[in-house]
Amino acid sequence: MGSITATETDARHLQRAVELAREASGHTSPNPLVGAVIVKGGRTIGEGFHAAAGELHAECVALAACDEDPAGATMYISLEPCCHEGRTPPCTDAIVSAGIARVMVASDDPTPKAAGRGLGILRDEGVRVEAVDGEIARAARLINQPFRKHARTGRPLVIFKSAMTLDGKVATRTGDSQWISGKSSRARAHRWRAECDAVAVGIHTAVADDPLLTARVEGVPRQPRRVVFDSEASLPLDSQLVRSAAEVPVIVICSRAAKRTATDALRTAGIEVVVTPGENEAARLVKALDELGDRGVQSLLLEGGPHLAGVFLEAGEIDEARMFVAPLFIGGRDAKAAIEAQGVERIEDAVRAVTTEVERVDDDVLIRARLREW
Image 1 (cartoon, rainbow, N blue to C red):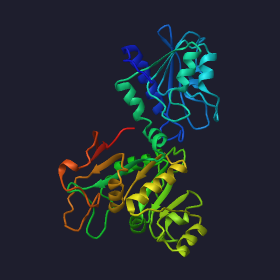
Image 2: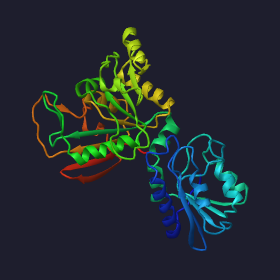
Image 3: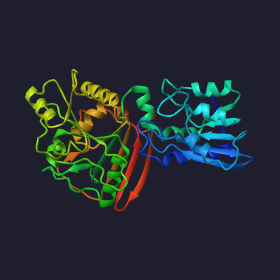
Image 4: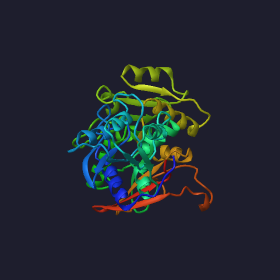
């Protein structure tokens, strides 16, 4: 869709719409985050955001919140309005019925059922429609990266999370890794779990740590699905993951090399087993992400271990990295690094981040690096 540069006033209202959308982070999947602001006569008369899948969309929430007749007003929306019938009626109908005169949107909706259709309908109904570009448009796209990648590829956005020492190690030579990062960093990681559709680890991490992989923070809307990449389907039946599968779903991704007796035992224990074909680990990984996407997983928090992270990196399926660096040195040639793979031969071939952000979390340093934007 064509775009314009927003005026200072328009940018301020669109920024507010983006801020409102963020209020529902972790609550709307598989729907996107959306915020809306209605302005009339230079005054905000209504605003709102989409709070959860199945509930009213942001545009309708904002219209319901208006303290005067919205006819003739401008509506600012962080994402183009929907025009299809889902669990809620089309927002374009509500906008037209309310007599909104002008609509400004910050970002497009890349799904086939949208992709500019809603804006076309509004134009046909006489509504003045404008889409903006620049930083506000980018900010609106960034809050919906999982939704956007899934819409374009069918696969989830992958966020790689790790905690390492100053010398880049994630475990000692004996495999001890608890705890490298501090308490506040670990609490942050639990919030990330709550915001994602699924959390993934490799079988070595699952066996060594026997984790639950649940989000242990207050106000969790729903627990993420737990995913174990386990080529031979060897996840122990007495592990915490298997024993808690009835409460929080577990998916085991295995190869065709897994024995039928092993996969049958996991299925009997309540585990969903997905067998993925492919000539190598990277090919099987991409197929696994397709399978997860088909199951509605739009965001995946990858928590290790180093070998699995290496496969993701070489498959080109890490979209963002969140790395805690703790003020420690481990040393040792056999101590584990964050990513173990073949790697590149030349620095110029290295995977380079598009953007980076650095934050202090008590004694740790958090580096957030986006490898691509959708």
